[in-house]
View 1 (cartoon, rainbow, N blue to C red):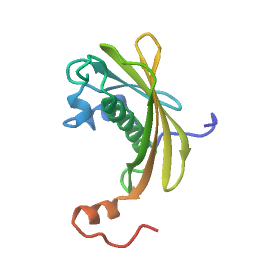
View 2: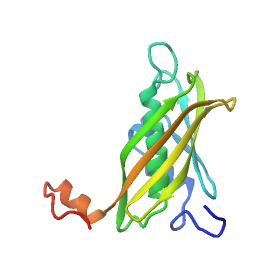
View 3: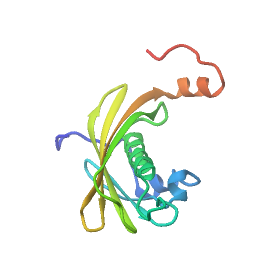
View 4: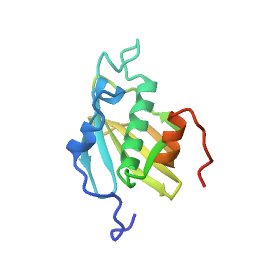
Length: 160
């Protein structure tokens, strides 16, 4: 993103981003959004009994949830939420090393911001700065009216 391009839509605060995740899986496992930079959104996730696998390291599925949460929250911050929503369409990850007890830090940055889709890269590091996971998430930008029709059980017309 060039310096002249404004990435974020509207006035955003970390408090508002964190509040929007109340009563979600992200809040249940302790995700906290900590930094909104010029071209990134950052959050932390504890590696504790809620997020580990039986071997005592961060569960890979939790890494994916963390990456998708970061990408979706960041994408949400780039759109007019009175008209659109972003939903994860596809995600993938490479788990590079185990996440040990403590905190992991995730950073989401955009690769593509289109009118109908967005692609975000997420890097997850441990507290020592070692990369433990890299992920990519593709999100669909959907009109709220389409989501409301689907929620009501009416597929309705396809989004043009």
